[in-house]
Length: 139
Image 1: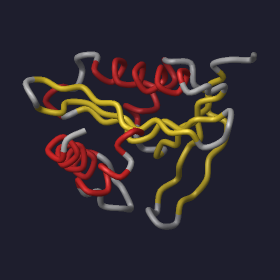
Image 2: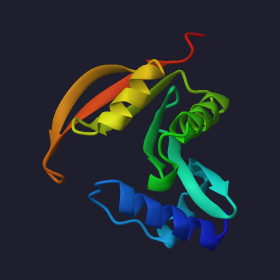
Image 3: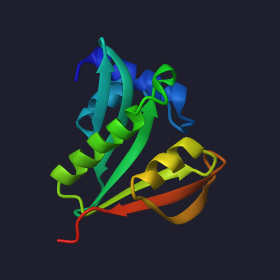
């Protein structure tokens, strides 16, 4: 990943998500192996982070589509890339957290077979958050 790509990812994350932390190009570069993204003429239009958290479990987070590209299937496409990355890494269970007010993400993950398993209050953000999981392998 180039510095320019990392900076675009950070900019899109900061602009489109209600995050507690502010991302920088430098912070993205440090964990660049965790990111999948889609480009259109050199511009990042969608991204997700897919990272191993346990030997069997991967977390998919920060699924983002640039505003002008919404409603064109890029959310489905980037989620599929993030899931494939996790599956290639040996994942058995995928997990994500979604603000209870984020209807677009709730719809996306629900349509793709994720089930809500819990919810909690995150005091740093002041938001209630759902936990969604999907079993992708039982072997």
